[in-house]
Image (cartoon, rainbow, N blue to C red; front, side, top):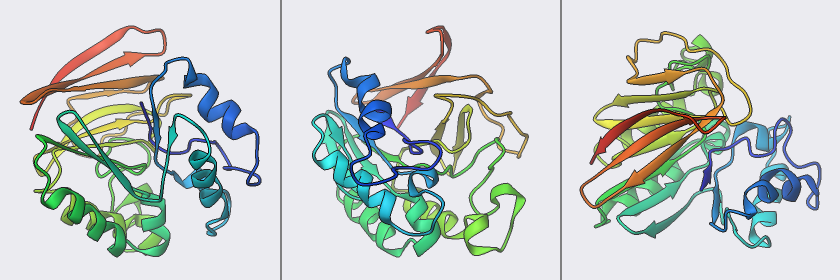
Length: 239
């Protein structure tokens, strides 16, 4: 199971031993008996541009059984998939060169059928935050617009990945750009509206819920499920 950032909303950890990490992040999923993979979101950094709360969450995960967040960027292989997790907020604040190299290295020689990337910020989104390079309607402003993330996605996902999952916008969508299916699933606790940003999503709802992804050697599917467990739609994924 993956949490796509803003794991401890709205301000991240208050200190390295903050008990809310166990109570809010780990405990609700422990009975499932599966690993919990995390990427960091902007709210996991707190209200500063410092690295303290983010590093505390990485350290907490390192000593918590069943929780996987070994670094700002990480990868693992399981079945037909290589999965790379990115810290997109780190890219926004400090630049994306290191994570772009990491992404290229992990996906460049991989032989698994699926090359899946997880991050908090969307590449494209018909939500309030919108598209990388023009977040919140800003253009040309380095941090606010997500210009560094646009470069990371353009160079790191296109022609390398065949699936990208993100959160940040508090809704659920299925889109496609440069041949890569894009899943936005950020409505675990609440929902914000769908906004027409020209992406023509195959699916888009402003209701709480999750996205369930199944991948096989040749094809897969994403199933969108609402907060009551009702299946809202199932869509094929092709690598």
